[in-house]
Length: 176
Ligand SMILES: [Zn+2]
Ligand SMILES: [Zn+2]
Image (cartoon, rainbow, N blue to C red; front, side, top):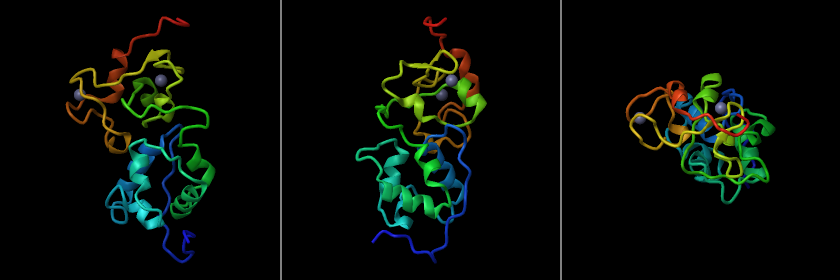
């Protein structure tokens, strides 16, 4: 029933960034294809699978996306299924969807939110930089928005750049 119509126009292609989380990717895709994807619900509706993509943008994966859901979306956006899967939480890892975390050092390397920042099993320290994740803006103390809404790499409230936040991340004593 949910087989995509081969004649339906595809939504084109947006290249995923390295380590990019599905929330961040779907937000970028949606803004890039604003005419065909006016809201967080549009992609799921276009794919005939309902509102699930809006949940993925919020990092809610319960129930976990099915192969079929991923397949129809991947087809619609011309993305290889395996690359789409790579943006989801890895099997066996427990996701903690809130608070949204940030490593400013990671963000300086690749400007996107990474799913691995949200893993519950990981101590709240970036494994690449040995810096504690930020869980709110160090300047205005507001929680970060969901990654799908990260339009310009700044705090949505006070405008502080994510790349400037690295100096507020404590170095972890472990491995020090
Ligand atoms: Zn990092
Ligand atoms: Zn702020």
